[in-house]
Length: 317
Image (cartoon, rainbow, N blue to C red; front, side, top):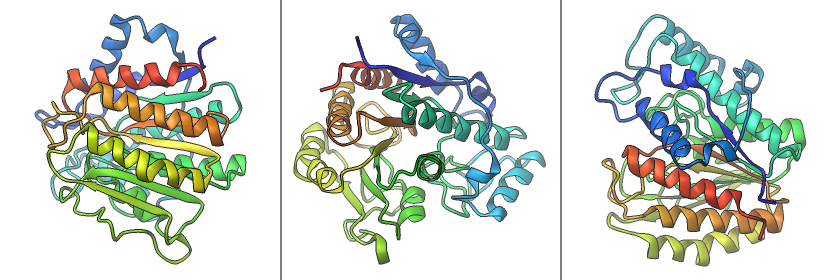
């Protein structure tokens, strides 16, 4: 029997209106869903019922001031919440809470053994959102809230977050920079937006050594990424022995993506997913929670998500 793979999605995610011409648009999810239905993969996934996350969990990552700012700015009709990248509509705060809630439902299903792994096709994305800052299309840091939730509810002591979005996950890094219970690993184009993610950023205080940044020069491709996995990421995960692996699964390092200059393919994402599954099977009973971040060429995004899901569905290694 193939592994039990869940899928988190809600049509309300399409109502997060970022405006004409914005790359982080509802068509990203429409493209994924229509493609999965077309290839008959949709019905092979377990679809979870989700609800908005309670403030209790969001406050484990974000300040009350941040929550008030995002909520009030959206409800007052502000269209741009930062210097220009992060667009919103009146319902965006509630939809962001639903995105977080969807990831929490995925954590529940995996931690309770109902599913082996789950992919959360949510928006708005989250990995650029810092404790008290919206940034880079992100309002709330979905993966960070989910990690804190897993720690609080399921007493997890060691969580690995692997961020392969082409942009550095500055928000996730900032939230866990002094925390040794969450090992943050990021592969990303550098130098590039948002300007963070250099080799020297390795955590501080008790968290020193628990941030691993692997910057990639523009033009890098599968060869460089596979070397990073075999030479650095897999040995680091074997030392850390995570009890849960979470992925900030951005697919904008694809060679066809308009926002970056990395040359991965669908096959590259499948290979990285296989590495994650191997590590999860070895250390944490196969538990993987994967969360959509970037990916802005609709066709490449849909094909990459398909490749990711097909690997997640395979029998344990």
